Image 1 (cartoon, one colour):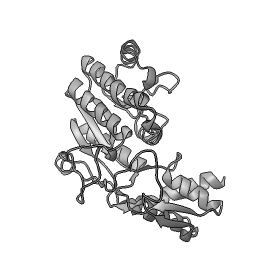
Image 2 (tube, helix red, strand yellow):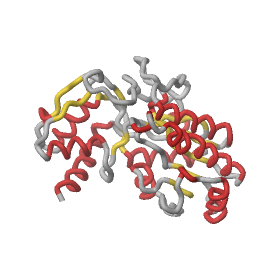
Image 3 (tube, rainbow, N blue to C red):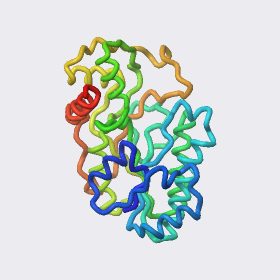
Image 4 (cartoon, rainbow, N blue to C red):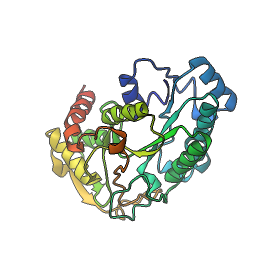
Length: 282
């Protein structure tokens, strides 16, 4: 397998699960300057049976002022990867986001739900989805949300760091989603790839929560004071990029594809909290 974005949360988790993988560093291959020649050369050298792209522009707020950069990395480059993979006769897999939805639903979004992103980041990811599917009929788009790991900086890591420093913080309590643990996502993604699935697929840990409740759960698990976090509304905490209020994802395809459900997020939280606390304490 050719794995791009090896150093991110999902790329790191996938690399642990894969035996035979070519994974160039970001210095060796970067989506920002991914020309046709560079991609073709990379595929010629790696000769993969599948191309997996975990590289992405993920700075949601910065994207509002870096539209061209976000659209290049998450959009055009993804489409070009898919196109050249198709030319090489191999499937293409890439990861997308719950932020392709506007959050106005009160029911979980499934693969057939209509996307309508409300920020530049979500728009750029939707561009990439559509370009990839148009360029390569063997494209699999895995949408996921609220990714957490014990290996990288992320929301839970930030909440634990602040609490370990004895600092209190306000966390929004009116945005609902599905926390997804990178290791669980990696296992399910490999299952999906092995089925030969194409098109859209939603993969998240089971269960839904808010950022505030997730923060309290993480602090409680770490035996830190959960009252160090207090709830606020999105209006109380304005950000450059609008956030959708409800982006819980469910799948209408996973069972038919024979992919095992990911664990409930509360069951996967303890191991990750332990990892993060050990990293930050050490």
